[in-house]
Amino acid sequence: MFDLFFRKFNEKVSLSAEEETFVKQYLTPKKLRKKQYFLQEGDTGKGICFVEKGALRAYVLDEAGAEHITAFAFEGYTIGDLYSFLHSEPATLNIDALEDCELMIISKQSHDELLQKMPKYETYIRLLITDAYIALQRRTTTMISLPLEERYVAFTQMFPTMFQRVPQHMIASYMGLSAETLSRVRSRLSKGK
Amino acid sequence: MFDLFFRKFNEKVSLSAEEETFVKQYLTPKKLRKKQYFLQEGDTGKGICFVEKGALRAYVLDEAGAEHITAFAFEGYTIGDLYSFLHSEPATLNIDALEDCELMIISKQSHDELLQKMPKYETYIRLLITDAYIALQRRTTTMISLPLEERYVAFTQMFPTMFQRVPQHMIASYMGLSAETLSRVRSRLSKGK
DNA sequence: CAAAAACGTTGACAAAAGTCAAGACTTTTC
DNA sequence: GAAAAGTCTTGACTTTTGTCAACGTTTTTG
Image 1 (spheres, chains in turn purple, cyan, brown, orange):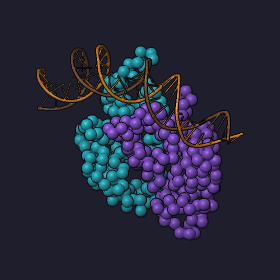
Image 2 (image 1 turned 30 degrees about the horizontal axis):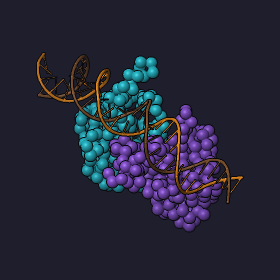
Image 3 (image 1 turned 135 degrees about the vertical axis):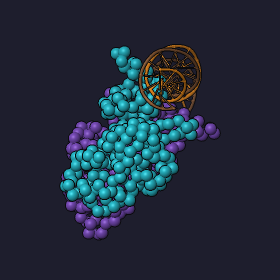
Image 4 (image 1 turned 60 degrees about the vertical axis):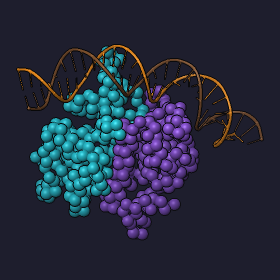
């Protein structure tokens, strides 16, 4: 149940069995059925979640009510509304399950206590956020510097999993495109050129 | 000379006078004239820099040789090619001075030593990257979810300084737009919508 | 298993953004 | 202080992308 969480943790900072037991106290497992929300705009205090199994997405709604997907999360990813988590403010993101999920939840209180009591946790978090930041930078750079066709190819290479598990119109949304445009890009790419 | 660096540091983690002296050993001041590079694509081991005074930009070149600005940095900001810094690999970014600059450089070696010897430094870095990540997330969300006019307004509010010190065509580049399009957005906005 | 919902594609058209070129104005540089 | 470089705007035109609608297919769901 906690397998993947500690596998990923140990990849960054190695823990003894005792340390793992200590950290486990602060984690709350949670299951989510497909389409259920982990977080809705306005919620407070829901924590962040590590994905043991399944897939989720985060999205915002614009004034017209259209969804814009800002992130996906699969096994081994961590997802949440980081700003609202850290500042204990209402969420601006919606996060829901694309598949049935098994999650490990870390509450703000657990997070703060772990930071205080366990330097290795701080290191883990630092490395986690650093990786996330670098990935997001790469995504941003791709968005502003590559023409559409190459941007699509770059995304398929960055996130190969994503393209098998997520409907195309959601990938379009994630890329800031209409579903039709993405469909046309794909057909152009497949017809040679 | 080190004033702003420690002011910002203390905003996140407070340091005693002795601790400040300790950290100072690891910092190298550097001045840069306008248009000089701090970093060029392919460089290794140049570190990251804290801006005491002045302004810089980071950009990538596409195959056609066009520049795409990925970031600006002003007083109090930290800028560098984070991935290449942390992994000691050749930079993929170019970073140059938009104005005469006074910088504080942290080398990879200093960074690693400080992380080892000083838990407060690790905390500072964690908080720094967290803030940077949240800001970048906000930028990305703005890019995919807002129509152009509102996106421009959102940027002017996010970075009020930027719009007084940076030529407009660079802001256009940062937003992933042509200079002409940004100029037209501005004229539409000024002529009362 | 049947009905409903979701999904991906395509066509016709409209809207948005990019490109190229010219011109006026400002700042830099020697 | 004159020439050069950089900057911003505008117009005409082209290309890209979005929108709306329709259709066939697959997946969900009761």
